[in-house]
Length: 416
Image (tube, rainbow, N blue to C red; front, top):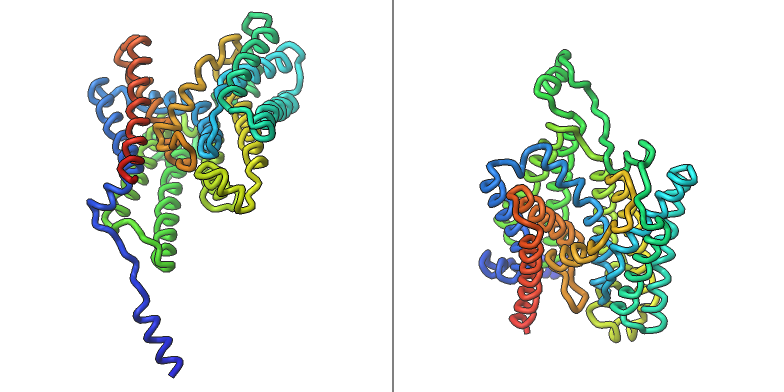
């Protein structure tokens, strides 16, 4: 009797309710609209630049030029999701680059020791700012605005108003190095000859295929788990189309990289950080608590979440990533300049907001921040190829940021 009742209950278990395609797209317009916007912008610039945008060398440069923006956008997303802002990241980045130059170039310090000191210094800077925000309740806007001015001045003081460089080759590899290939680009036999004749970097190309397969597998696994637990899932058509587009784009980008010099070292760093931070924000307790903190701080505090400690950690993490970006930026330029990082905090913040983060906190994803950073990078790169002046570029980027914020406010009012 019990078995029959159990069987009956299991057979009448509520099925997963999947919304219609139109309704689902309307409810998730922010997520899919961002991906569509990136595709449209890339197609537009590919056409108006006569194919220059997606040439192998330009795709590589696009990744290298935006590496430090993406690295800082990962930390900025967490700060903004927690309900705060950090205006000092550009100045901190420039200061860390100056510190690295003084230690490595002027004092001939070991690059690994200097790198560790730079990362620790960045974390301490973030911790100092987070302390005032978290435990003294001083608005983050004021604290980080003060930090922006302080570290801009410290950069000038440290460099004595002059550029310091060049860096040793071992340090430059951080931003300008590439992963070695399996086969040399010479005519060989068998499989090696195929890649060699076509001048394809096997590591980059095969990595792209492997990453696409892994992406599809993870997506299918997550979808199956959601269905098993009765979680509302996106329509199958949208899932398969989105997965195919992302996987194809990944293989295409890696193919383009394989046609030039292969996998940049900094791309591996960005990919590793993006995966780690994506996992932390989506699959860990501390990640969920950060979203709860930004969504409603008082409710989070009443539920037992240590909101002050989370805020402190968010700014400490931001300082650490700003330091990492500072070393990448300095290594790419092969010199440290007093104006390094000037106004870059605006690009980082814009990338996060364009990527779907909410001004009030509690909303945003790592993937969105990365796509937002790439969107800003494509805009900068495409307009530069077209020869558009920096004055018009700034105006266009400002309008794009305003449109993203207006879209966010519109969605909130629509939901209300």
